[in-house]
Amino acid sequence: MDPHIALVTGANRGIGFETCRQLLQTGYRVILTSRNAEKGREAARQLEGIGAGLAFHPLDVSNPESIAALRAFVEAEFGRLDVLVNNAAIHYDTWQKVTAPDFATVDEAIATNLLGPWRMCVAFIPLMQKNHWGRIVNVSSGSGALHSMGSETPAYGVTKAALNALTIKLAKAVAGDGILVNAVCPGWVRTDMGGAAAPRSVEQGAASVLWAVKLPDDGPTGGFFRDGKGVEW
Image (cartoon, rainbow, N blue to C red; front, side, top):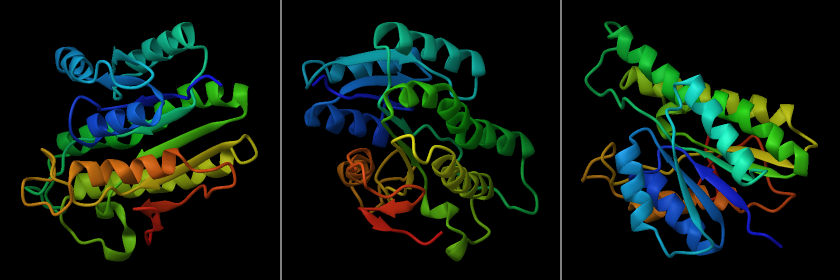
């Protein structure tokens, strides 16, 4: 059987890059995407020779034309997509107050953190439906969990909460198509966004994503998980 084909957004560094590495090591063919083409190509170069094969394509998830170009590339080169990891995100806005935000920052966060994954799903779900199989993993955050939400990081937290809601709606929309859609919180991870003081390694964060990618056909859908365990919404 041909290896599954997985696409990861925001994959030139951090959790996205490590997710690509772990997917390759597990036997997946991987499409690494990055908004910055130079950094994306360098990331792909670092992963050369691992696993079943790696392709790079530039992608700005906030740009519908960029998504359309990627969709055309995937369809022409592979004819299908089995796994979509929506990892790209921006603006962990610790400097902002919800009562006095910079709405330009909020707009950018919405375009990347919410509308980006939404547009990616709309573009690629039809390729999964052709084969009646797929896995979609929306990389979310505890910052988007309503039960423990504070006033900090308003743009990031609100967009991640909305991504969680989108996860539920998408899962219900494709129920019966063989596609599982879940949100994953990788935890507080030592990345450029998480900082050096974070308690979890990038490898641990990516392993949470891989768990959702590798779910069996009767696995959960429409859930929110960390380390394979449910997280309160």
